[in-house]
Image (cartoon, rainbow, N blue to C red; front, side):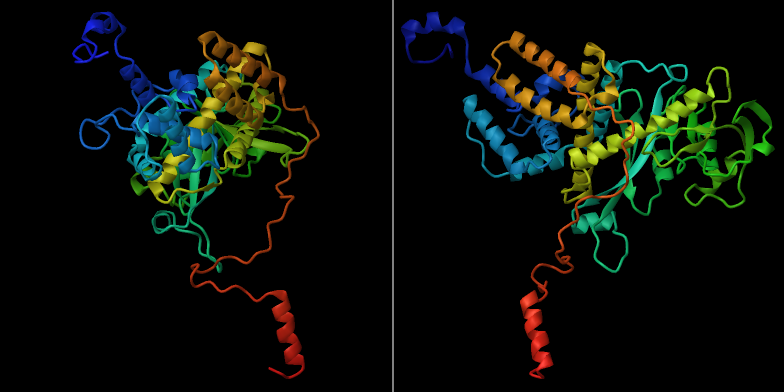
Length: 488
């Protein structure tokens, strides 16, 4: 209550100790959203991210603050088919519930607030959630408990806008194509979380994108990758720029065991890789000249046969030269577990629908990718909690099932009136995730094929106002009949 109000002067002394009820309510409206994601995951993301600007835009507390806009984008990323209009309706319901002012029904203010968010804060949120997932994941105890990172790449389709076409030029082909983006991500093999992201167009190879993420590697890390990354240039750069960082990958060269310099065991040798004569296409000439002339590496050849996998016999190249500390069986096992991260990319592109991004500018596309990756990491944190508390294997917990359960339990948590009830709901969520495990399917094959064909509609190969529909079947039959009768 305002102590200086002219109304009810006789009750002023009695009502003043109660204080104002409006300011706390408005403060809660400013900090929360209706979905309450920040109540569940706020301790995993530093509160120093997305701070209020010092001047000009976002310098005052408005309806779409930076913090609230980030959580709205995160909720929208976990619900991929949600429009910006639905986010605005959610905030309207929140303001109406908390007694705030009426919010505009247009979504333009929300779109402008998303556009003002700095991209570098999203990268920091991604790294923070990855570290939180690793802290909560069960230990692996593989290769002397070093941190295992997996590098992999993929391609995404973007909205067909002039800005996207200018930055991510589509591949030249007879038919019109959409802008495409190439991404390379660093996974943590311990929890499945994503640590870092690098983007480029389809003309940018995956090797320079991975080279741009060398700052995320620290001494003692082991980088696991497929044979697209296992070449002399990358291994020499790791040795020069990141001493103490090791590599495991499928060899891109044909290695003859008879030319080994030392035999460490069955299918386990030390070999010499020499520098090629032709310089690298993406590495500057001074850096190419600075590379060593040869590298002493270790090759491990063995079987990683799993029913349904295409590869049965692999030859790996690694910089882990100590065969006593790093047995060949553990090196093969670490490479085999890399397939798990292939399925993480599949979860991102299918479950979170990241295969096609609706952003109309390159900056907004990057923010949409980061929000989905941050949501992926937060869900990995929940899965790791369930695996630890109920002693189940993390790989057996379903990503899609965890996402569905999290959506429903967050909705139920919002209706809980006490902190104890919210804690019980969260414990129940972890138990459900641990009980709902993926079935053990040792003979299941995963062919790269689709079961359902797309609709046989013609492609929209021109602007809408210039596009001409092809004639229907009955029209084509009528024209053919007229031609037979020489009427045309």
